Length: 485
Image (tube, rainbow, N blue to C red):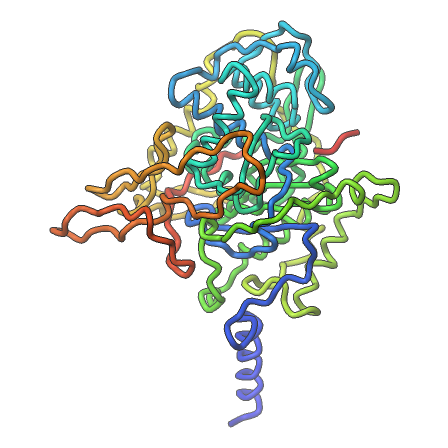
């Protein structure tokens, strides 16, 4: 055999070994400690591309506001409230610390404006305004948050407040937060704007989004940041390229620039998976990840202690090189295309921030989503993603999931019956009492062939971790023109 051919064959074999990890098919274990967690999934299928401490319980901090937004938009969709409904700032809302809008008790604003301030400014007072406007009190809203979590299959999450301020029983995980991010994109595609606002303007005051990927990482289109001393710097980020949308969850990062660079590196790896990606070991779907029964790590000393260090984004570059030095931390993903810190562009001047205001709506809030609704109605005819590439959009598969905002997920195939909801868990449940079961709506029979009897739901069946991922309709992202959150 010619020498050149031999070298090429050896190179290919080496590449396959690196892609597959260990020769026995096992997955190389991450070299990182339990002080960080990371997860990368496909938004439409839920397929896991990378997992690192993904089911370790974690304090969500302001990522809680994603659930607050979900419950609020669920109330809008059900007709309980509208985006133009006026909510009042209570004394309890005005007393929230530390990041807030600072409105005085008695002031009013629309649900729409409160959502924008919540997602961009990460305003803790606006979270309480929304909670009281939807449910009447923080406690009742927390009950709705917990019920919704169970319906979505977020088996590791427990909520006691709508903003993520420190509370021992306010717990989630990278797995659950990825499920939540996926549900927001699937259930409320017409409201993509809320996750993708670079800045808001109140009077002469302009406030940038704490998510450093918005407008600075190619294809970034969401979602939310979070920080408290116990949790470290958290981020749920979404991005779309060539018709493929990915969701990255990063928890416990030591600084805001670091978390942005780490998320960008994960997303970049996901977008550059090559034609041999199917040879990599399957990690299953996000819902099938098995929860860990543990106590959330407490990072107070490392994040806020006297000897704390806030490393720059370049620290994530060193981690990105680990896969070439320590046995491939990123078994299923190719090397990052460039340094992660360089993937996040320099901050530019914000052009045309979205104006927010107090008082009644100046025009119906839903008009800003009219164009998105029209485009969603044409999903079957093709679309362009955030980097201008044409993408085919086939109708949802016969076994695609649809979710009613009140009754939870049901099977869309003809003849399928709604699966029973998980039992509700009390908002005061202890962390140790969190059940590790998979959501029942992920277990179902395959779609029936023509002439076959109707599908029969099998709620007791356990999902196959190697099974093909369940597709969700792919929503089109909408383009968007000191205390770190």
